[in-house]
Length: 345
Image (tube, rainbow, N blue to C red; front, side):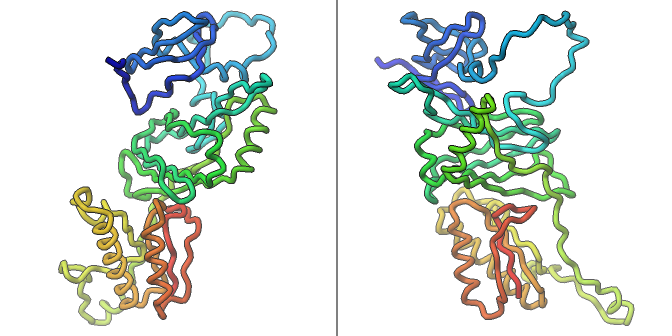
């Protein structure tokens, strides 16, 4: 009977990982995952179980070792200043995507990068929900949805070093754990570094003798954008009767920002297939596009998300056929990242 292997969505160790025993500084290898708290390690041919908090990755030690310094006076617990966040990563205020290279030896005994461990680092006082997507050459390879606490880091997954040549795209959608009307409902951003840039980052990291490098995702979570409302006070003062648009369900009010995320449109989205979701999103887009024209709006922001780009491409194809559209652009937006298209009439 084959051994039972336990998997944990946030476990950072895998079979084959090189590790170091913290109390003895002996290096070895993980040969089996026993459960969510213990692994089986091999140290010079001897196999024995250890708890996860008794081991670490040896490459932390390689980059963090410094020359011995003269002993300092003893410090008591009350006199030690608590550090903010995790000092493993060279980051400042904000939320970051950190890359931690895992090194191995080649046939010439030189250090080579085998894989990269990815961490989401939150250096703010706010907890966030996030949806993370990794795609290669436009095809989704990995998805994860979870929460990250303040001043904390979250292990995402590993990627092989050679996959950096496959045009990786690291996309995130953030939202607040505790909703705030003053803040945006969500924030989307993505990183699409070129392989040459990543290789350069790794070389500079090794030159500085650091264990990781990171890319900023955002410094501060964005505020909400208020929808434009026409000032009808002058008409009302002149004696005209003003009826409220949207008082009936069949007469929806216009919007300057339209969110097409499927969970915003229906409560039954989990029972729908991709074609049904796309059809509903396009109908919603057409409805508010027509309302924008009826109310003589100068622009309309359509939030379609990053994802695979299917919804964005369909919307762009429709816009190219509309004579009322002066121009449209899908560029970085402070509230939506690259997940929105701005339409100008």
